[in-house]
Image (cartoon, rainbow, N blue to C red):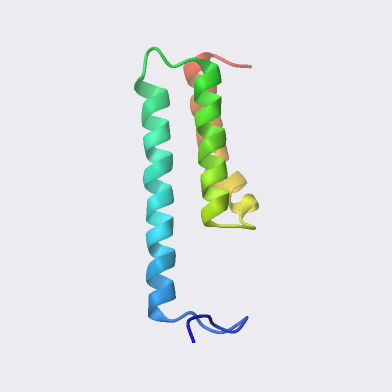
Length: 88
């Protein structure tokens, strides 16, 4: 009933739930980026912990989507860390 067979088209409820989860992830990543960019007292260790926690939360919401995380969000977050903390 509630679950589709593998390969079946998701129903409207499943698509809405997926869209909600994607939006929640986008908001979370944007908040992490905002804090890293704007909090003058944030240490590099705290910032990297935030990035790690965001990754863990994303993978909890979207299991088996680590490749998508690495393509979509990791580069943005690490570019910001590099800019903020003058890494490399």
